[in-house]
Length: 299
Image (cartoon, one colour):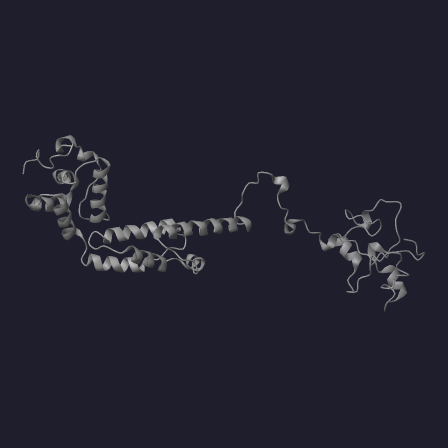
């Protein structure tokens, strides 16, 4: 075989092509499959407008290890790229490749977080590998891809007619845009407001007034001492009505009448209906501790 006459009619000659600069190599072992190797070579040749048959002359630059030893034993029988490609598949494809790849395609489902575009692209890549040995009808591809969609997409497309794989990808993008907008509306994603003064103010975020900050206006029926509560956790001043201090610390001169024990307004301990229920009058007067009231009835 004359290297200079091989692939005649092509503008490129073997000696002008720097195959060693392509950074493509195949050893026959590891995770780099023979199908990926074949496709990478063909894509590179197409991008450089090189006749595929010239790849045979450049083969020594592409093979390493076990694959290089194998190529040396068969190179005298190879006259074209198509022959080399068939020989590569016979030698390095796994046993029952077509059958096992079909099983892989049929069971390849869309991942939970896998976007429609990514899923369809991966499925088409699997079909492309299969089509090196067996052609697959486009409608069959679409049916398998749609059948293996995640439940979320299946539900959204349940009543939608899909005419092609491109149509399916476009519908998937629309579903993803809709899901993104729903996430923004639900507050799951933060987005800067261009005009914050016009943004919706959610009532659920407004400050809620503590029940202890509410000034009592009626007597309590639970039997708990209000003076004890005021000395403990606050609750406002029964003397002037302000919420920022307790009646023991009040400095207001103008005050209102109230019961020192329960905080009921317009009454004293002597006249308080709560204090005058089932208790000794003397105990009512002296039992308030620091909230003790004199017998004159003045607040």
